Amino acid sequence: QVQLVESGGGLVQPGGSLRLSCVASGLIFNQYAMNWYRQAPGKERELVANINEVGNRKNYVDSVRGRFTISRDNAKKTLVLQMNNLKPEDTAVYYCQARRGGFTSWGQGTQVTVSS
Image (cartoon, rainbow, N blue to C red; front, top):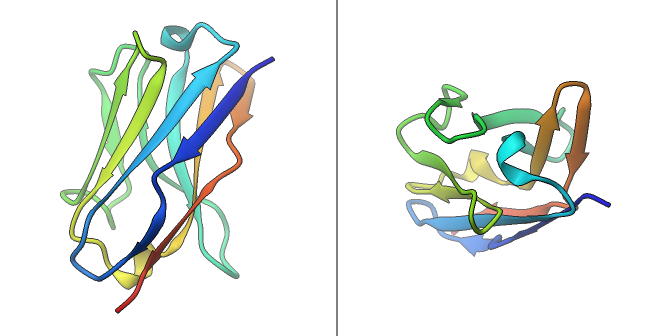
């Protein structure tokens, strides 16, 4: 059974930083592309960043490019999203997703709130 567990969310002031982690189990981690999504209240879930299986290709939504960094440690089966210079509009529940072909699996989400 695939399980993804996010952590690292919290309340931070504008301009601050957070580091989200997603630990995977029940899958061969290095065979899955990994994604970070977020969903703000009243909005659709959006793809924030993704990374390929070996970690040498990364993509970001324009609104976070230059502020967020996605990375992975295949030996530790861990996905990371380093978020710097956070803005109030980054407030959302952040989810990690594992994807391989037509198969996807989601974590339960972690809340990020950016407010003064």
